[in-house]
Length: 430
Image (tube, rainbow, N blue to C red; front, side, top):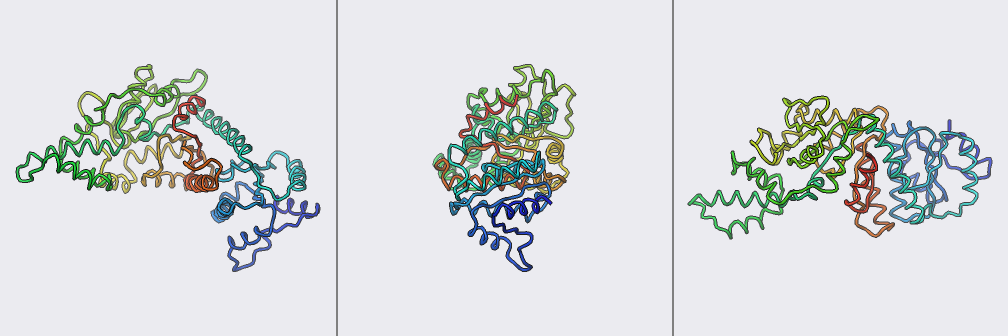
């Protein structure tokens, strides 16, 4: 085995080696024992392989050790060693790793030389970390470009896509609809609702659960709910944006490759479709199982409902309120869940403008990850770096925790300093 060969060589070179496989005893607390040994060591070698990432206990050991190092600012080095074709997990990617997968002996010689020079220093300075980050983004872009060229790339878009183009934030949309609801209720003489009542209502309930407020709105706006939502959605002067333009660029048919497979959006608006139409990219908004698309049309799946700017209001169920979210969550065979699960299991998905807080989306990601026999993290999400001092312990821990959560759902994180950088990432892919 690779671990035995590494340990044997290091002992022959005069290094003391503690191997958790052979030196843990029955009944030992694994994490506590490993952390205890780590306190007495200068270097920790983590052997990363496809087999190790089929083991949840091994992944938990790795993550716990790295987290403990970040919190305590441990001075000992952690060196991941890659022994086969597995991709390095996100929470180890900021560390310089050794690749034994191409030539084991060359990798072994490099490790021995490295350990001889090591004086229990931290692995990466801020300058080295910045360089590693750049290399990592380059690799991520190459993976996504390969998926695009193979016709296996799906964009998954959240609210962040439309906000830059003038669509109101969720909270602002609720406030506009609350105004309309209270205006309607004020026509009931028995309620005696005035403008001050509306203001007080917003103060009291505006900070509550948006899903519960959504239920109030649906109940009281009744048949006018969809049309009122559409009016509030496009009330501002909506426009295109750099981000939507970059999505269009990515969606254009490729000269020597297949086109973008599909777009999944959680937004009600039609801004992406309008931009695609303007640039002569054939597309079809799909918001129910009865709608089909031609082979030359890019399908845009509105899994939470669809409200185009003009024309008749479609008969669509808007996932806006608590009951609608519950229905979607428990109906595993709804068309929207089946579409999302199909893309998550068959394609490479790139998530943009999404916070990963939707419980239904998390459930679908978890199901897709469990159905992935090779446990290869094939999906990506673009996220803004935590707003902590750069390279501080707090920033490293925050990123580590977010990466652990994303990795557990089969997602790699592409970190950006600002959401304004997202268009440039998409342009690099296209």
